[in-house]
Length: 134
Image (cartoon, rainbow, N blue to C red; front, side, top):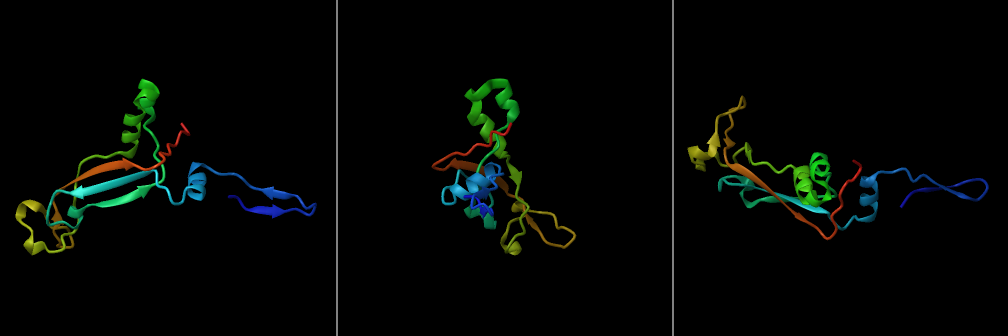
């Protein structure tokens, strides 16, 4: 996992300085910890079909753990993923086909943006890596 350097004496020196990101990245390349998905409520938006990305680990919300302990780890992890509803604001691919209620005012560039609501969700992979460097 770590690069080794052979010393004149024949011994090997290994620099094993790392953090959790390094360990996960080098040992668990094919296994994602979390999958974050987002989906727009507007059928006229490119994000309406949704998109998912892999996240190697999550940092829990420390305040939840300090108040409630490990019994609330799931809530602490969800807070750490920060999954709020938000206004989409993606450029509309076919602005003329989009009804007024699904688009918002023109920017300085003159383009219209999606006014749909983006929802976020997550799923846990085979192994849930949680950053506990609290």
